[in-house]
Image (cartoon, rainbow, N blue to C red):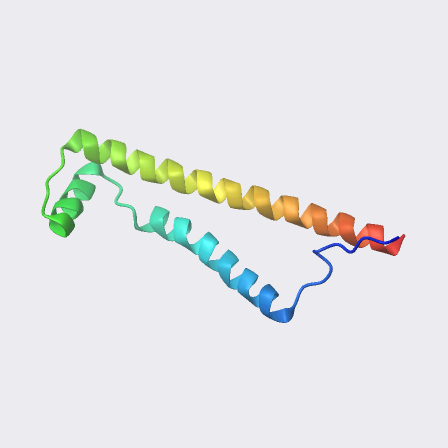
Length: 98
């Protein structure tokens, strides 16, 4: 009795959708890190201009650090998923050849 693996039977549409999602997943946190102001005072100014509400310098510094760490953690999570998926696909292809 053979069990079919889901990684070996994918339609072209699902592969294309997966690739588009992966590109968006990698670009979003990278863009956030690239566009994040370097100083907390600039972040406080941008926040005031965009929302009309002022925040303190301490809050802006904490907000900047939080966004930076969250983006880096998400990039690390994506890298872990990529490595795990490549190992799984490699194992899947070696099992089929046996």
